[in-house]
Image (cartoon, rainbow, N blue to C red; front, side):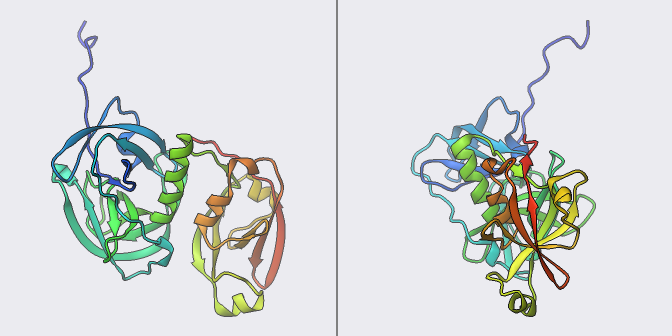
Amino acid sequence: MPGRGRQPERSGSGSGFVFTPDGFALSNSHVVRGASSISVSLADGRRVPATLVGDDPHTDLAVVRIDALNLVPATFGDSQAIRPGQIAIAIGNPYGFQATVTAGIVSALGRSLPARSGRLMEDVIQTDAALNPGNSGGPLVNSRGEVIGVNTAIIQAAQGICFAIASNTAKLIAARLIRDGRVRRSHVGIAGQTVPLLRRVVRYFSLTTETAVFVVSVERGSPAERAGLREGDLIVAFGELPVRGIDDLLRLLTEDRVGIGVPLVVIRGSDRLTLTVTPAESRNN
């Protein structure tokens, strides 16, 4: 019967970059997830096989291992040090045009963006450096050539609204993927973003950090809701450790936190509160 024959093989392409001398490279999860085979075209013209080390749909990041010698790794910059208005340069292979470079500025920091898994990606960089299909997984770099983000998405109907996963998040996720092949998490059930604190707030509460996590929303029935966390709260500490931003909070929400009550220090208006939150196991991958 028609339609029962073998399905034609499909292929796709994206971008990525090597970040270790021994061949580990970063790309987007949606570029490589579900692929039966992966090959990589290098800047010097070589086409070499690669294997998937692991991917994390919740941050749309993936690590692959390239089987090649004489690789030159990119250098990561500190995404927490960048500011709106700085130059941002996107490098990738849109529509198969290799090593295409576009430039713009960092438009905004601390954006939240839905991943294809449905979970919000936090602390996303917004830029107007032009991205097109095929740019996914390529590096966003600063004027010194340091990687400050991993390009991940555009808004199709808009002009100049493009997004990249912050490099500090990418470094953290890449390390876990190399170690475990996946990212194991606990979660508290909030959407948040990194925000600067007013100097008078820092002085008044004798805080050790000038940034915090602003709670944008709290999931219904989540550990955060049960702990009494509210929209608009500022998270400044988790346990005994200060929280400078979303990256810090993600780093602290490890698998060994599941089911264990942790003091969460928040600023709510003119009050400093300590709530006890018990992280639950994240619905991962």
